Image 1 (cartoon, chains in turn purple, blue):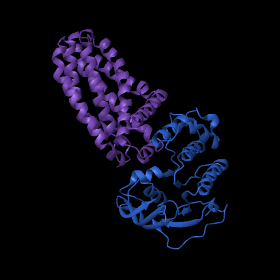
Image 2 (cartoon, rainbow over the protein chains, first blue to last red):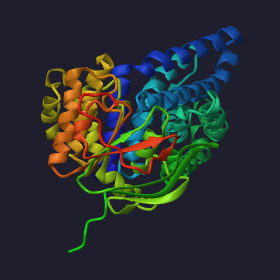
Image 3 (spheres, each protein chain N blue to C red):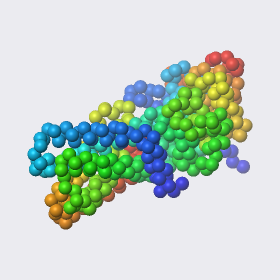
Image 4 (cartoon, rainbow over the protein chains, first blue to last red):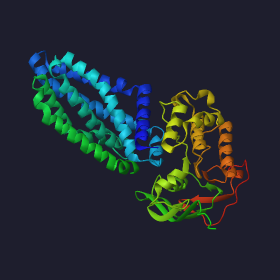
Length: 224
Length: 225
């Protein structure tokens, strides 16, 4: 089987599990919604403050959601030893990584549509002016979050790993995604989307680095 | 004409987990087409030995070859030709029996059109579209056996395949072993209760991680070991 078809099979399997189990909709979305609501209440009714903090909260919410989805993607593998089935399959493990990352990216993008609406409503974020740049930042940021989550999510199901191993590892690593995403979103809603090119470039570079890292080292992480 | 390499050839294989040895200095040769019963109490190291042969874990010391391929250097070649069936069925709860098998087909390059026939053979054709989450352990094991039927691996590694199964499901495992034997494939069957010992051509005993030097006669069929 070609690498592309194998990756597609892995992605289809993960998406089917999500469709049946609805973990993104049933776990990540309520969590993110509660988080945004709590921040909104804590920050008070001042419109300027809400709008100023909205880009940061949007990307923090996506960061937390990606960690939850990465954990869930590998919990499904660990439930009855399925991960060992992947290890023992005589296939290119880079394709398994690519398939898992693709599925997670799709799940995140669907989640982001809902989160974006929540942020726009709760924080009165004016999306209209820079929606193109925001969409580009979200798509590029999603690829990076999915790459890191799919690469290190496997650590969430290693028996000797602590519960907090995944977030402790992932959150510092994806800081560039959060920073670049926040900056690009701020510029977009301020009507200065044209100045966001360098931040979008940073997201592209991050994506390339972690997609390459996943392709190169995923097999090692999986085997160990 | 050259003799084919043994199905399994291990020399002085030791595997430790931390400081704890699971198997120690195991040397074992299993010829092609043999059905070998691996006996031993719980914790004797049977599962570790099977997992070393399947390349799920690497030996800490020692060397070996499976079907003529080196354990350390040719893992993918070994994985292509071996199948490890354990009480952990490696199924995805949220997928149906047929979806699980089709994914297995994708991983191993098998025609997914064969899936309905495999489910028919294990008596699950009627629940092919139902999610595995609602299955009993016996039904899950049957799905795993269907996957093994699809694989048709040259070397079949069975780790306590009768655990938790009812009489009908045990029959399904027996038929799997018999079909493999009749097809000239090799089977290494680990169990601490060899109630189906009549299937084996030879028995070896593992005690505290060490393979006992003298051959053990297989217990009479139907008599727990």
